[in-house]
Length: 450
Image (cartoon, rainbow, N blue to C red; front, side, top):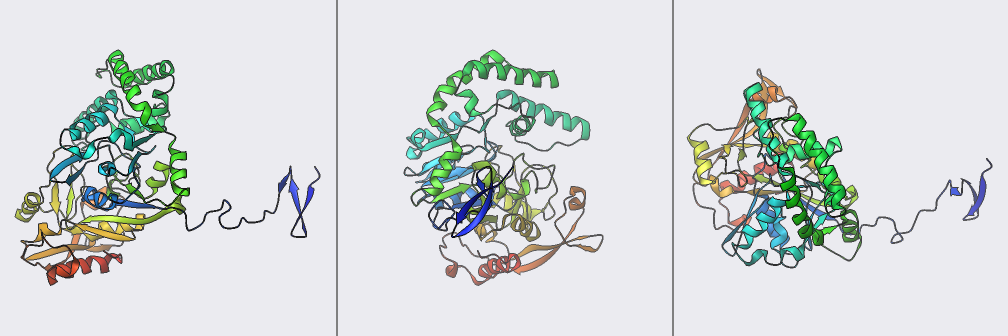
């Protein structure tokens, strides 16, 4: 086939099938990416969750235009206090309390519809903050749905793990893992399926339910009843549904907007980078923002890593700095360390900076938000984990193998406590010198500003 010839700036360039081999670069503002376009600000947990992300998001959401959830489901939990009213969110972005902001649940989130609407109703009864939430919420049509049988399967799987291996994963039993399994197996159902042709949806739903019934004979599924319930939810859901890709594209490329992404779970619970297998089933690191919202990487701006001033973990799994003593109990009681979603008691320990540094490697935090510093107020000295050893040999990296992490010995740096209340402090300069030193130590170790 002969190549056509075209002229560009006086020079001839060859093309095949009408496609030029050389293209003149577009000038700024003519369709190419420019720095003036909107970027997303991301808030992520830097430990095992429960770092206080909801409070940080609520603060940033006060002047946000859009607040997004990009992954996870109602296995996450955020508590936000506004005008002395305590709101608990699991699926709804914390920013839904901002009457002037849009909230967006992206395609990377798995949605249990009864959970979503029950959550909204319960929070409506607590105060006025959630009034008109339906007008402020948009849901991606590509988001997958968590069905009741997913939740039942989650419980059965935990029982099987307990019987077979003597220990379970400590899931929330909210159906998150089975729903993501359906997504990966390509037999899951999405929001777009539910709100379009219900007859086609019903057929696919029956096939999916039978798939799980074949796998788990003890599973009890009332298919007709759940379909009847889903038909009602389809009508409630339809006004909220939008094409998530176009929604985010318009937000990123339109007039100036402040766009906030609220991460659920945390870095060490990430399916790829967390303490596998004791992790969640989604990417709760910064990569999940791109895949869970349809946001190109170049649009990611500030990435805030939320770090609790000590370390907590819910459920089972390795925890090198855990304190199974009076200090651990003190942190648990003073910090009111109970899971928002499950109510389970959180295990507590010293701040593990090896773990947080690893989270920084994966996420590239531009700043650290340190929370719950006041919980340490009564301690005369505070320890910080700064290195791991295995058989007296230093471990250069955070290990992928959990058998290794379970057997590490932690090297600590001991810092003086401040033994006075910091609860009413509102700026860094007002903190006691020892508390300032504690924060500076964290900044210097991570090489990330607080």
